[in-house]
Image (tube, rainbow, N blue to C red; front, side, top):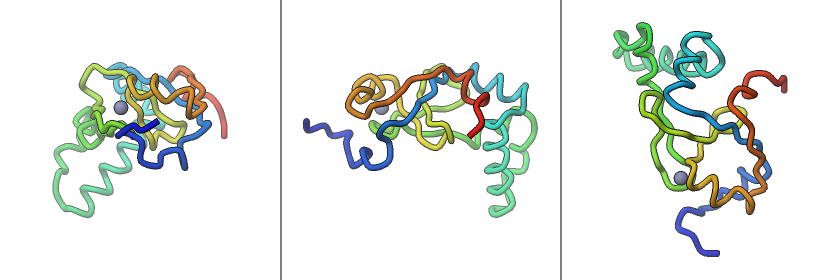
Length: 124
Ligand SMILES: [Zn+2]
């Protein structure tokens, strides 16, 4: 199969569990609970502000979400916390896949789908 979206992702994305995430709900919950997703954004945001010596005003409250966005690992579709969209992410929240690509590659990559509520439950 020749697909422009495939550029060697088989090497690191095969047989993984993906968690279905719905924005902006996922962010709203993260902000309320200060969970691992919030902590990840917060850590990156503070590091950025420290290094660049600017953007401090965005560390306040919910504004911190604007430090985060991701792209689909296959088609480069963009995910942000404030746009209504569904995305699938890996346990470490490092890789993100849009619904179209998830559907197209789920079987050939051997992915398991779980709900985002399970994302922070299980211990590694
Ligand atoms: Zn995609």
